[in-house]
Image 1: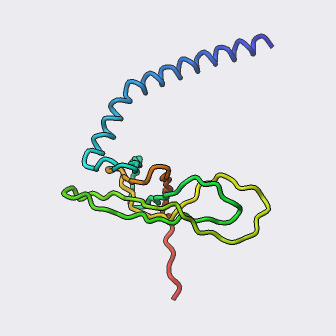
Image 2 (image 1 turned 135 degrees about the vertical axis):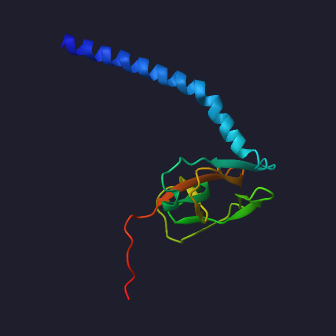
Image 3 (image 1 turned 30 degrees about the vertical axis):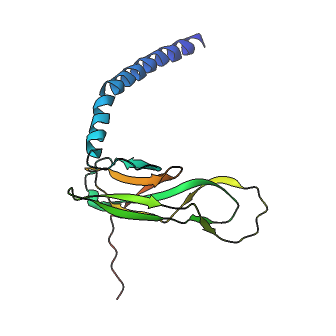
Length: 168
């Protein structure tokens, strides 16, 4: 039993050393990574008053044409058991002189929902608005402006390898 404890202790010490080294390396390169993100955002306007700039940085893929990104704006809300949808609009805008696009979400916070009778307490839940599917491009950030209090989530979609023929 004593030998097992010693082996576990040695493994734990090695793990702590590796973790410490990884942490120090990440801290060393963090300023360079932050500088790259800042450089990518230079052409984009700062968030106007009452808005927050959300940025999605995508990892490089070998064939990015097989991927899409779904932008999902929404807000945490206290809601009942019905199915809720946030009313709002996600609009694509052109960054003049650069050829880049960014997105702006606007909403007054109103929702629509089903009308089921609920017999359970209200819960805090992310209520989303209609999303937008855009092309996957790891070379440029996806920049979305949304009002304070709203959040942006995203989902990566991947094309299936198999192509299916249409029935004639």
